[in-house]
Image 1: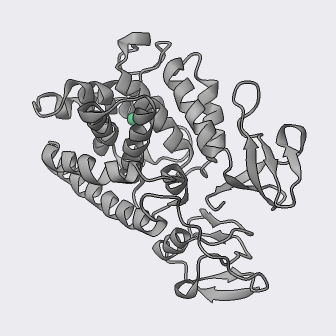
Image 2 (image 1 turned 90 degrees about the vertical axis):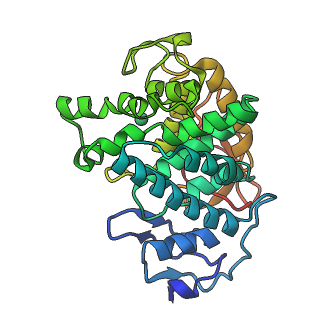
Length: 353
Ligand SMILES: [Fe+2]
């Protein structure tokens, strides 16, 4: 084991000791092979050095199959988070959305990010040290774009869906951070304050003629649920706009797979399990089936780290009759493990093949 300065780290080095931020966020698990964006993450968190297993030589960083390279994706993502921050500050100060600026973001930057092969792996990997509102809004826009494509939405409609995803939580810009980031449970009054954000966001764009009606409804209805249990208007079934149904799923997926002040993120598989559990009451079943079918295809073949510390590859990920978090995996030695029958769990998804 050797202590290496963060600036001297090379992709492919093997992490020999868990890396935890001063705030207690686990940034890297022991046994992980470093990737270029994990190294950037470490710099972002200002971690000066980490422990590396020098007995195991560094492997080359895996490149994505096509589209932006990992490093290019990360650079573009960081610049886009900054642009989102800039637009949201404008909204906070002037109480109006800079529509042209945001359309520009959607048409160029966000579409490019969403079209990158491996985008969902990258979103799971990237953890910037910044206010999660900007990242969450961007991630929901990107995931909505990915799901929108799976649903064959295209052209101006797709761009409107992405804009709705980007703006879905703008009402939260006016909720005090003490309520928004409060660890633990909220008081009934605090919960009422949070529940006003879809309507607050809707009011902000309501009189803006350049914003399509579908975008406005996507913002207003993204917390409505299929069975009428949502808010603010307790709408049910087809009374909910399709964009709001897609954003609801993207919102749940990103919230569960991101770290929050009060809890650690879950793996994408655990988030998919939770979404599958809501597909017959809270969420739109048709959108869910498309989402889960494509996600199953996406994550089959993905590498994982098991609770035993071993690496393995997902071989069968079946959402019909089994727990999403318990796939059949194959170890590097060729051993097949059905996690449904083993006392072994998946602790991380990793992007290298
Ligand atoms: Fe929301």
